[in-house]
Amino acid sequence: MFELTKEQEMLRAMVREFADTELAPKALELDRKGDFPFEIAKKMAALGMLGISTSKELGGSGMGHLAGTIAIEELARVYPSVAFFMEVSTGPLYAITNFGSVEQKKKYAPLILKGEKIMCFAATEPSGGSELANLGTEAVPTGEGYIINGRKVYITGGGIADYCVLLAKTGDRASIFLIEQGTPGFTVGRRQEQIGLKSVDVSELAFNDCKIPKENIIGKEGAGFPIAMTTFTVARPAIGAIGLGIARGAFEIALKYAKERILYGKPIARLQAIQLLLADMDTEIDAARWLVYAPGAALDKGATPRDIVKQSSRAKTVGAEVGFSVTRKAIEILGGNGVSPEYHLGRLLNDAVELIPATGTQQIMKIIQAGEILK
Ligand SMILES: Cc1cc2nc3c(=O)[nH]c(=O)nc-3n(C[C@H](O)[C@H](O)[C@H](O)COP(=O)(O)OP(=O)(O)OC[C@H]3O[C@@H](n4cnc5c(N)ncnc54)[C@H](O)[C@@H]3O)c2cc1C
Image (cartoon, rainbow, N blue to C red; front, side, top):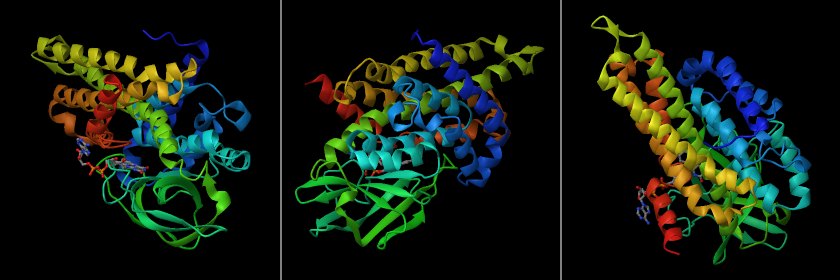
């Protein structure tokens, strides 16, 4: 097993308690209503959950990437939407804290970490998320700044974010910009309804002659793709962690049920067919845990994002698969109750499905992994 430090174990226990007391009693209602739980996000920020992997100098707790992965896993075990929010708010912040100017770091990091403001990351376009090199959104330099035109889709938090970290074409290359909500020409389009992650806002964004000052560029002009790829590499294991958390949540529900449900005068856990399912689920979860924890652990030991490209894409694929596979088996164990909302498995399955395209499809992850293997 992965040897966790005492600090990481304490963090896990704290987040688990938060999830069991704050999220579990509300999960069904939150999922039905589908609103973003601002109050819960504020409580998470107050407990320092939004800055686990951000350095202490920037206002985070500096506990490292593996600690962040563990916290996300624990939240997803109970209510994956909230884990997804945590991943998505820290993802674009990583672009700023690692590539932004000193002023940008000082200005934006505390606001995000304290939960006072929300940030989204806008890369995907209607023409296809997998082909990011073919960007339609363009930022044209004006001397004083840039004029932006284009459209983005499937942007997590797009409808509720105060700041948008945007990938846009600049000449032959791309650049990353920060655009504040309310900037003339920047509008939020429709919320894109999802089958799962019901509390996560996923929206379209539009930019029509949106003028921004040149200070709003993050990093150098033309460095957009390397910044975006590095940000994705660091963010993808969190998607794997959400899948792992979903699998654990579903496994716990199925195990409890199998011990309590009586058929033929004994608990169904005594039926060998059920035991085989439980054994497979247990194996899948522990195998996935190794792969999901590996990239964060490597970063904490000094690896660069470039060093973990293979581990990161693999963690995302495996986590998304295990979330789906284990939850499906849990549904089988519960029979008819498996698809009843009160047993939570239907929503967990729908949440797991959402992970399949998020931060890049399973096929794109495997293409990246193969590229690293064949290097
Ligand atoms: C819940 C959720 C949240 C999201 N949040 C964000 C966000 O915050 N910001 C953001 O920018 N985007 C976000 N996305 C978008 C996501 O990144 C894209 O959906 C994803 O990159 C895939 O792009 P696409 O949907 O356009 O599919 P396409 O690119 O059209 O892909 C369609 C199919 O073609 C396959 N394919 C594509 N290229 C290849 C290839 N070279 N070889 C083999 N197969 C290939 C894909 O694997 C897929 O099966 C989110 C998506 C979801 C579901």
